[in-house]
Image (cartoon, rainbow, N blue to C red):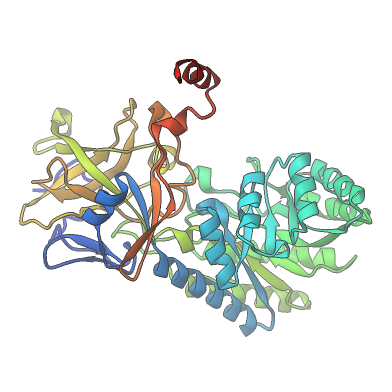
Length: 471
């Protein structure tokens, strides 16, 4: 019987042990023993050595996806007679190790804070391959970026024109800048992920752009290189990108009448499959649709096709990453006002909204499986929840788990490589998980898990008390 609490998109699995390859890392497999491995390393081994919760990255999958994205976007640009810069959007998942992979693979990287800039520079990437974002960049962050020699700074508001110009003049450097504009295209995504609406904090209106660009061009230490647009995140429909291109190319043509406009940055936001019910287009489909749209619009206006730039993050980092949890308490909850058979199994794990805030922030849906063993048990509608003092502390809102899921089982949650570590926190004084990269049967620690001692490193009263009691 169908559980009335199950959403329409959730399909009762024929086999609770099955793994959908479109969702999991390409080297995530279930062995004949029933246990899952990632890149040849068993989940039990990972949990025993590094503890849970634990972020695990299939390194070869991450590298392969980054390469595929770079190749797809550059090839699409070449097909219309131009070039493309591909930036990894580091806010999806940033560490010095991750940035070093991006550097090795020949991608550029974008950052949105002084901390992300510091991590990028520490990775050894050439500063000219770094793009700087942010709606409220401090004067210190701006000065540091210019001093480092970053390739471009994205201007997000009128006041930043003067701030960046002043910093560049003080250092006697000419700083390349882009202007972020809001196309007004409303991406088909969560409201908090739609970033080209008029009523939000990022960017400037298309109507204001010509005057702002003239202001940029009036400064001898600024060089305007092009427009920047980002219509949103986790987008599956290509139509939004095509419409944004139409509006941006018209503005690009207008701005080109008064000076060179070398580039057009179309941002990122390409969606991925978080659960088996999703059907995200392949990156090649996005790339081809965007390239064709750019060529058509440029031909209409009789202008040369500009160099293009893109900023994928989630599409690279999302699916190669999983999170491992240990099951704690379990309870079956009967929802009496939802009809007969309305029972939901609440499965509590040793993490929660401190390691995955996206469910609470965006009503994000995730997919989970029992990873430490296989089973013949029937599927049961489940909700995976954390250990925080919040009823909204949900990791996986709707999914089926085996009815015999038990304490100390290991669960794997798919597609947590993007924005989970980035948004991790210490709510309820939980320590943040470690990050492990797995490759060819070996696991290595990328970021160690926090300890309780780490929680007190900035607590001055705690430090003072420790000094008094330490002999």
